[in-house]
Amino acid sequence: MMKIGFKIGFIAGAAALMIWPAASASAQQYPNKVVRVIIPFEAGGGTDIVMRPLASALQAKWRQTIIIENKTGAGGVIGAHNVAASEPDGYTMLATVNQTIVSSRFLYKNLPYNPDTSFVPISLVAKVVQMAVARPDVPANDLKEFVALVQKSKGQYSYGSYGDGSPPQLIFEMLNKKAGLDLVHAPFKGLSSTVSALLRGEVQVSVFSSMGAAQPIAEGKLKALALAGNERDPRYPNVPTTTELGFPELQAAMWVGVFGPAKMPPDIVAKIAGDIDEIVNSPTDTRANLIKVGWTPVGGKPQVLADAVRDETKTIGDMVAAAGLKPQ
Image 1: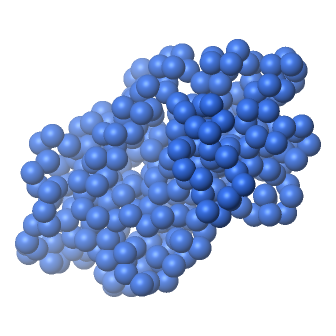
Image 2 (image 1 turned 135 degrees about the horizontal axis):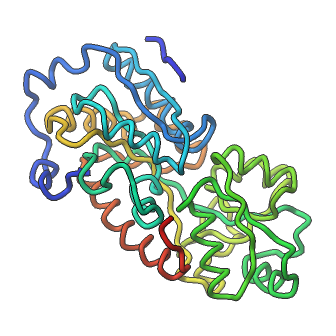
């Protein structure tokens, strides 16, 4: 837990999400007590990196204490359920990445929440490009060479992931099916654990954000195989995209979004979204720090996050089907 001193109801709430409602008395008084933000992954991951500076900035703006709690387990499901079961008063929120809201619906038979009705979208805080990476002793210089290597080296390679439905699992299981590979899946508790396992040699490849991979790549501890998308990253001009390498179906953006429990008052949703938008889209230290570590600030109205969930659900659904993954 960190103490900083100082629906998804898409259909029913669609009209309310299109505009910033006028501030009501409840929104003007919000917050008047401690605010909890649940991150459903271990400390030190991408969601932490985005949310902790933002929480500090919101605390300064609100003059109210914000507590961040890392509630891990089941690929983010445990923490998300905690928020879904909370009072919809704006004092308990979920900060999470795509997999908790989007991927989980395809990978778990009995979710304790409904991804489409148990939450309300508040803000898409930031997004980042994903990158397939390998240990430097892997004799392949890009993803296409790696596929050819594994095809000739059956049973010798494994990939690390940070939960069911995370980008490493989706990408490498698709490659397993499409290219006839036998990469072994090694799941870990979170991003930090996955990075550590890769650096120790417990697995040979994974997929991280370009931000998360930057330092190990600069130190020669990892090497980039491909950017998971259609466009190259100017920070990595020599790293090809999956589309260039003949794998256009391998798409893996990551975003961090803030959600509240369903039936949260629209005026409070709008206030939080507006305050986050102001912080990440103004010349603040928070915005500068996000950009410095490789994240693209987004912000905007709640509908921006609602649209991202809708679009990502289609993309991830196609990837899960193509990879042959079944709900457990």
